Length: 163
Image (cartoon, rainbow, N blue to C red; front, side, top):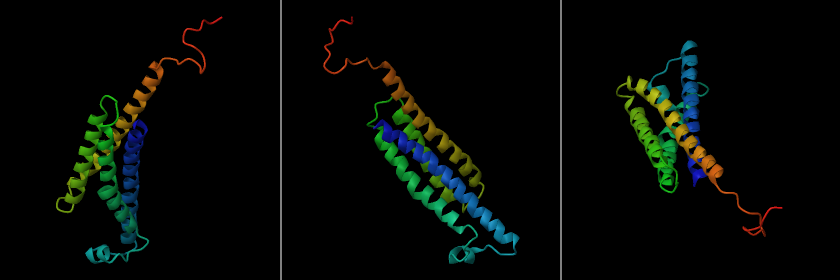
């Protein structure tokens, strides 16, 4: 379960990086279109005819952030209840809470664009907390391995005397 927990946490962090790349691609494409005399308006965005200007970046950003990351964060929270590491549930809950906040902010940007500032900063918080969650479990695994007693070789009795 520890490996699954760690994998889910790192997947969340990686997915946020994919989102950042996708939205940068989308806005870069839009800026390129405008710099060449094009116009970005509601009709263009709804027609999905702006091929080559990065509009796929908006779709990737929305699907990864609105569907994929929340599902993975929920899975991380569920898995945390089966991981026997101190703080695993807390960090999974923090990640999940930040992801929920991120989704709410993402859908609220249309009505209040200034929320985009918080949306961007919160994305960094999601990456940081997901990384902390993954690293804490990995360190706990390493500590458990260091504390595990050496087991006798197969076939050797525990009361054998070394020569």
